[in-house]
Image (cartoon, rainbow, N blue to C red; front, side, top):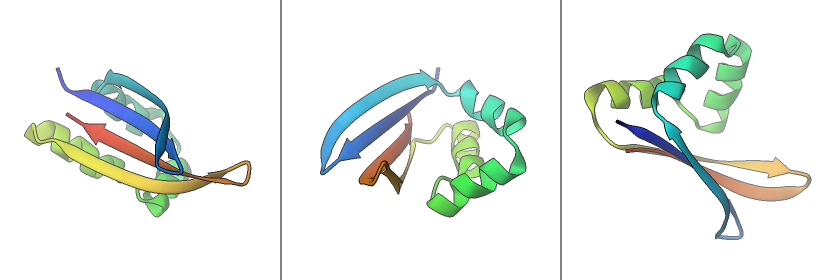
Amino acid sequence: MARLTIEKFIDGKRETAFTVPAFVLGLARTIMPKSALASLESKGLDLPGLLEAKRAGKPCTKSFHVSEKGVSKKIVVSLA
C-alpha cells in the first residue's frame, strides 16, 4: 500500500513527521474546497500531481515553504 509522509523542517532540522495511507490524497481532494486546493497549489503542493503519481505507482516528492507564527518552515510531502 502506498504511503504519504509529511515532514516539517525548521532551519534544516526535522521538527515533526507523520505517515498516512495514500488513499487520504483522494479523500482530501474530494472534501477540500477548491479555494483550499488552489492555495496549496500556489504554495507548491500539487495534489493532482501526487494523485497521478499514486495511480502510476511512482514515488513523488513535493516541498514548499510556509511561515508559521513568524518562523519559516519547509514542508516536504513524499509519496512512496
